[in-house]
Every structure is written in structure tokens, then in C-alpha cells.
Image 1 (cartoon, rainbow, N blue to C red):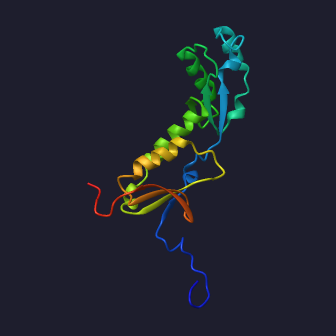
Image 2 (cartoon, rainbow, N blue to C red):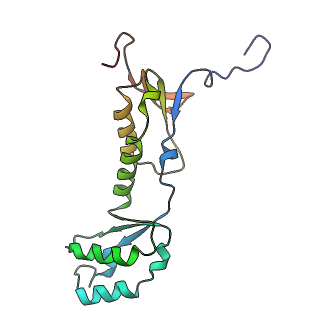
Length: 176
């Protein structure tokens, strides 16, 4: 409290920079496309049946979404099958990604975090915000730590009022 009885917001006055990885979460919706559902006995790709199943599939459900194409079992999928799916889905989707949701999120975070201007964190005390509503992958936390370590004075995880220290540079050592 100040001498006049007003509360002091120590967090706001701390000089901490806060990064919320949820702000980098993909904005677009995505849909999952599991190839096993289009295989004979969920194992074998029969070209004629596969082509017919794709032709009859309701592709409009993927409109304005990113389509994540993967196969959840150990079937051998020829490369042309992915190309055929792209030829149908490409007419309605925003994007097509070959891989699972976790692979998609890793690649997304690798890309967006790699585009950050890290100079603004030079010699700063940084908190990577924890706990949120979105399923931010562990990879994003590892990657932001790797990227920021050469720049920051200290790196913490959590909320500004309650942090877990991750890294602290001794005061007499500068980034070289």
C-alpha cells in the first residue's frame, strides 16, 4: 500500500514482459481426415474403391478449414492417395496438411515463434504465461525457451505474480 492507502500493483510495476503462447495458437479451424476410414477393412487401399469413396465424400464440410490428413493405423499409403485427396479438398479448404493435430501444432508454433522479433526481449525479464484454455503443445514452451535464452536476462514460467524460474543470466555476463 502507498502512504495514502491505495494499493500498489507490483506486477504491473515489475518490468516483466509476459508472453502468452495462446496468442500464437492457430486462428483457423481444422478438420481431421483419417485415411483408415477410406480403406478396405481399414487396412488396405483398393484404388477403385478408394477413388469412389473420395468422389462420394462430402467435401463441403471442410470449407474454410485446414484439413489434417493422416492415417491412424499402420497401413501403407501410396503418395498418389495424398495427391488425390488434395485434388478434391483443395477446392474447398483453406489449407491441407499431411499429419496429425500434434504435428500440425508443432509446425505451426515452429513457424510463428521463428518469426518473432526477439530483440525486444534483449536483457528483459520474461514470463511465459502458463495455464490457459487452449492446448498449447509442450514443444511451444521448449521452443520459446530455446529462442529467448540468448536474449533475456531471466526467463520464467507461470503467472507474473507466481513464477517458476527457468533461466537467469548472471549480471556480469552479456550476450556475446
